[in-house]
Length: 349
Ligand SMILES: [Zn+2]
Image 1 (tube, rainbow, N blue to C red):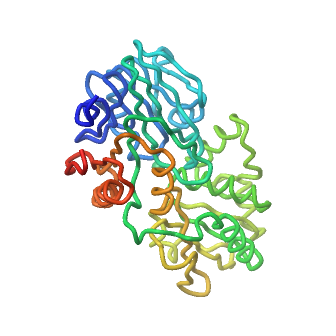
Image 2 (cartoon, protein in one colour):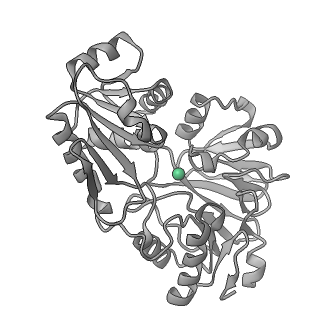
């Protein structure tokens, strides 16, 4: 089969759906595709989900992701709910679909489809290394290339868990610590801190509180969590020893947020767009920590070198010019034909 005809079997549409074969659409709505897969709960991966819930026959995701979607207000009829634990295969009219573990936010998955005609296509979803299974022996691999520019490297990425836990411990020795990040990343950081032995109570809003309940139901141990507005929250605040989590968007309002009974909290912003150093002080009580749940450029290259698909598709719907650059890098430097979709030029195809 020619490389060009492979592009008919795996692509990224203008509306951000990753289509694998003619039956499976991932992370965006594609009319006429019977199965909609959700790799994880981030906003740019649940595009058109309400329409897919109405029109598709099945909504497939890991059991945790399905429950997190329900907690976020998506009602999926039981007859359309396809709960797929990692590595369990399901046949969809002759195509075989399965999910693989991705290290990103809790519940995140990669998607593998073995088509009826023997062609193997897959999509990484969002991921970072280590902890993500490399999809190998594929004819077409669609990859998330958010950090696809050569300068976008975080050499400390593999040690950042330890560094972040140190920053939080140091802050806690003076008073409360507030961490600012996106939903999904917040839950990931909670688990990371517990893993590192940080046991201060977590203070969260109601939405994160609901996600924590789902995580606990799925066997994750998040420990002591109190929800803003409850009596427990008042007590925890009075103690001055806790870690508060806030959405990224409230970072710019951090100085005008209500005081903490005279305590002066340390504010920590978590961002993937910091490439100079692992953390940077903005002031005595404010820091930016370079923490991402996406592969940086080095990790993207190492994934593709190991996977060695016949054709690589970089997702430019989400990755923009970085995906276009990454596709041309892969084709010129790794010798693997690559294209950025939608809208990209075809390099080496
Ligand atoms: Zn994501």
